[in-house]
Amino acid sequence: MDDFILGLPKCELHVHLEGTLEPTMAATMAARHGVERAPVTRPPAFEGLADFLAAYYADMAGLRDEADFTELTARYLETARHHGVRYAELFFDPQAHTARGVPFATVVTGIRRAQEAARAQGGPDTELVMCFLRDESVESARATLAESLPYRERGWILGVGLDSDERGNPPEKFAGVFADARAAGYRLTAHCDPRQEHSIAHLWQCVEVIGVDRIDHGTECVADPRLCDELARRRLGLTSCPLSNLRLYGTLMADEIYELMSRGVLVTLNSDDPAYFGGYVADNYEAVASALGLSRKELGALAKSSFEASWLPPERKAAYERAVDEHVHGWRQR
Ligand code: ADE
Ligand code: ZN
Image (tube, rainbow, N blue to C red):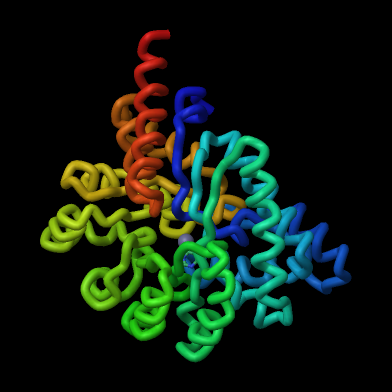
């Protein structure tokens, strides 16, 4: 791993905590709780999103109590710190746990304990983004939103997102739930995964129907110049995940990422489900850097974009962006 990339201050905006569950931890937790399951093995690649999601949900079976969620989150935060992550907005999927009888409070309290410990021990600083599973019903999303509200009031959850299987589940299915989430003070984001049916229509729905504050993946917009212009005009962040693209669709989509950068779209690099896709965030920077031959200045620009696309207040964004500049300039003078 390139030390410049590892030490580059970064913001991670697209990582699913459940997607950081490494096979050994999944097996240990399942055994601890006496959960019947096949031994976890992860294939080198998946045959698309649905194939990946089947493994992702099956492997969560051992996540049952508060301590499990604390351990999962603490382990990710330790790795993230090593990868130069200074700040992250972390996804979690409450419905994947409440459907198995794990209370919502167990999930958020367990995660929160690790967030607070990391914050007290040198970072990274983190916020939570709760995703609705788009292949579940609108009623289930609505009930999950209602359950989350006490935690919104305490400042434990910053935003809501939309993930899981996109096929037949367009963003507009959740327009009402997102409107209610906005009214409750949440920031909004939604997945528009690569290579999906109706990708462009789903992207436009995110922008024009939901009014999102960010889009997860979203790289397919490159095929629609008018959409690219609109995303660039709004400085709407896209959270691209190169190694996820590689393991699900056989390409990093590095050329698309470069084209979006060139068109002024606020594209960022992230890790998605790093325990499944073979790398954490610095590995994603490195994969794109070597595919495109990026300069340190260009890598610095990508890191600054990651902070700009965050939901931090402007003065905190500016401070992190200065830290990126110092890293880039300091490196040049070594
Ligand atoms: N859940 C976890 N990772 C996801 C992804 N990349 N797309 C949709 N849903 C997900
Ligand atoms: Zn994702």
